[in-house]
Image 1 (tube, rainbow, N blue to C red):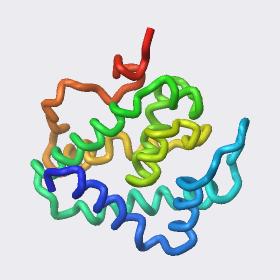
Image 2: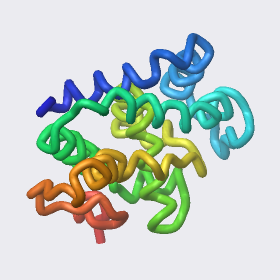
Image 3: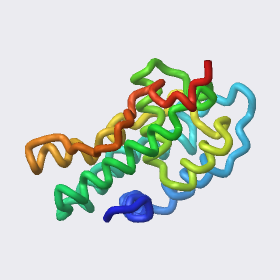
Image 4: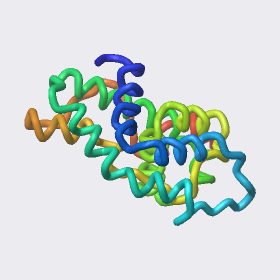
Length: 171
């Protein structure tokens, strides 16, 4: 599973068993036209998705059980790149949060899948204030460590930490 397509397919497979309501909520978040000062906290569709994140991550872990060290490293590399690419001031302005909070907000964006990720990358207003998925940020790195005794070396030379993408943070 060396490519981005495989990663996004795995993400969708982890969401699939959670049902129609969760899928609908994810689509609503993706397709909405955000209102100025929009606050979705505790309200559908965000509440539906947030209530499902733990089970999503559990499903993702189950789907990854048979993967090799190289496959987990490849998946971690995709997550790292996706988090890096949306490490941008215009997205942070919508999600808010400290450095760690913004990392976790980007984890949420990645966890929701390719459609939401692409929507936010193209229109940062589609991001959600205070929505986080810390578990997604180093998910495959932690699986790699649990199964093989060490964190993977992605060899990318980039960081998933907030404010590390110079292109996303113009002076």
